[in-house]
Image 1 (cartoon, rainbow over the protein chains, first blue to last red):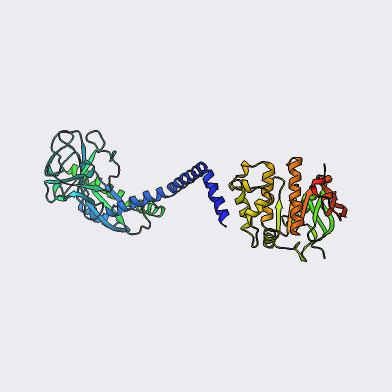
Image 2 (image 1 turned 135 degrees about the horizontal axis):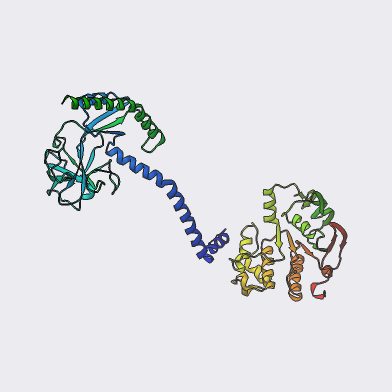
Length: 256
Length: 233
């Protein structure tokens, strides 16, 4: 079959331009098809891995007022809870700039932070910042916080912090538009984590929740539907708590 | 005993629900070593008959017995083997492979059969020893037809079928080609069947079959065939 092979070889040789064009065309087609098919899965997998590393909470309850001890106990009794962690958060400005920053208390169970460099805050004078700010601040430098009127922030014990490390967080995936705030431009520019003891009040404003009845990875239908179901199940309880709290606050005001 | 026997062979096409007889009850016998010319008008069924003889088509009914074997009920695979080992085919428009030189075209055919002839020698026989390295596009029509005859002969087939081999050639070249076919037939004692619409070349054959409207009109044996050189048309 030597001549037959020769013929096949010459067929390629005599139409090398056509051969290359068709090869490129095929490669391009395969490239796009595989890309379309795989990119979505890849992105979901990457996101899921990122959330797993950070133990991201499945749901979050935020309150303008503090969550009282009584309410904390009630929240702990919500259905399907795997874990619940109470934490604090406040917004402020970094003095000397117009940068708004969200300060969070360090969490240990849910929505934890991954340390990229340096160390986590050991006392209430230290802060770790968003890893994206690595170029702007150095480990060992100091930042001073203020509220929107330029005074010291009322929720924090101290206002001057030593930068001791840089972290990533599952709460902030974007480079910009980290969330809305009442200080600065109205957009959160960056975030930082301090130790729990840096907050004045021990009454938290945020409750992080993870559920024990979830299946599938993040963005999967089964996961999202179950989370939504759990949340709508908890809503009446939480609304009742809010009503009770309002009444309580009014009565306190009236007593005064 | 005849080498080729065609018995009641018919080929029927269905056209608009009507039966169209391309071949209608054809019967003839060919002895071994005969140069046969099948002659007839356009549409008389010559090419259909040749395709059936060459195993490229099968008849709707009837038998085709070659060397005492009935090939009319062969499977596709058996047909392929028959075509490959026993039949050489020369087409009106040569059908050479453009990517191969003339010698390689002949070698290609010789490599698929067990007892092939030497390709160089065959190229010599058809008078193309100095064009072996030319590609078909570099050859004239007559030369291309000679290559395609060499390719058919190199397989050393029992049956050489030629469908209008001179149809695309001028008078002189056509004569050369026919001469070559006649010589091959008489020297090797193999069967050669030539299909043509040119009735003037009938004298060169041992056996002439005239077709008309899908039927055999005349079946004559020619005891002393005329050499091609002496035929004028």
